[in-house]
Image (cartoon, rainbow, N blue to C red; front, side, top):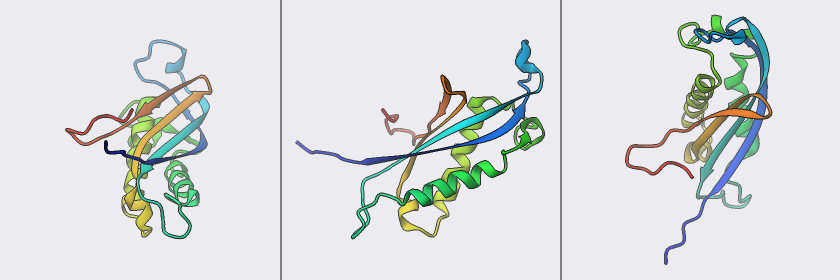
Length: 143
């Protein structure tokens, strides 16, 4: 039997922004604000020699904070790409996922380039969230 292993790291942050959901046909179609919660998860198989870390949390938190900076204290409907697409939690989670994935891929830290971004969840309230995941065709989705 072959045993497979990996580690997952999760970081959380938040940003404050206003948005109006286009075509919603309810009170959320009017401009309103949230303190959005964001949870980001990466995984990988190899720990660094010596320190035995998958990735320094500081690197991961910085990538997420940098991605959220462009959204914080904005009217999302006026901020690209949400000036064209609905600023829903679903679209926000995909946007943040792609932004952080690019930052990790371009990082000078080889451990940042070695991890795989698993998911990004965005919540408008603590009791509900939208989660975005991507995987290569032919690969099974994350469980």
